[in-house]
Image 1 (cartoon, helix red, strand yellow):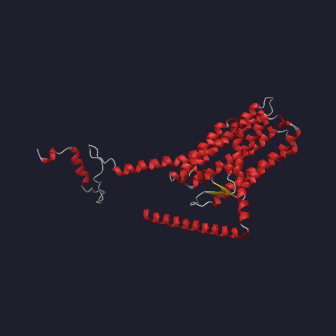
Image 2 (spheres, rainbow, N blue to C red; image 1 turned 180 degrees about the horizontal axis):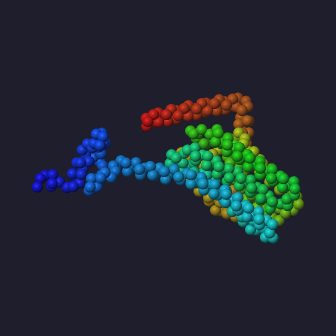
Length: 361
């Protein structure tokens, strides 16, 4: 028996596969690499490099779906909150209005859940490097529902149940809801038009729409707690005060979204790498405070939101006051130097990103 006959079938198949292949037209076909895997008959399965690339591509596609799923969770929470408000509005005409308040509470919780989804989708998109234009547009549409339409409807529907609605009070609620929803849409459109891809997102120009929605929910929580705890909320003077106060507060919160007042991005400020341990302590203290005063959580949350809402105008007033006198000029010089350093750092980031792209190309 010859040496060729003693060789296994797989070895001869590999030799045949390693030889140059010619087609019927005489062209030389591609020769498979040494790392190619074969069957017993000599068929080439695939190279390990190709399989690794395919697994990596599937993993990237799976990760790219996660931010969009979180964004859709935000939209689903907003739609569900609107449905619950419709259910509560139907219950207002019935003798027992406790069910209506239950539906309103559920709607407020759903808006809060939408804030959680909205805070997670951007973080996950940046961590997985799957940010894109589609995700940004989807996020704006879901924010318009959850933080624009749903709080406006909560403002109008809850006002109907809070006090005796006359013709002028109903018009005031309608006007406040329309102004708030319109300002939310304008704020989201301006954010998309003015935000650059390399923005650090540490501050907002105008009150962010999730914070404004939290302000409307806080009005609902605080006033519902007072209505449940005190009987004087049903007296004539209190009803007249609420008929003026609720639309005015809703309108002011809506207008804060379209101003140029600077607001801090709380999530990015608290949960960055430099302040991770400090942020953990802050979150634990906040949870301990809520657990200790669990009966007054409907007042603690509005108090925190009120502090955040007032922080923008307070900082604006501080900058106005410090801009006068010798101290003010020194502050302005320090502010200009800080802005120049930020511009230089931004240019360096753009240059390094361009060099990295050229290196990968």
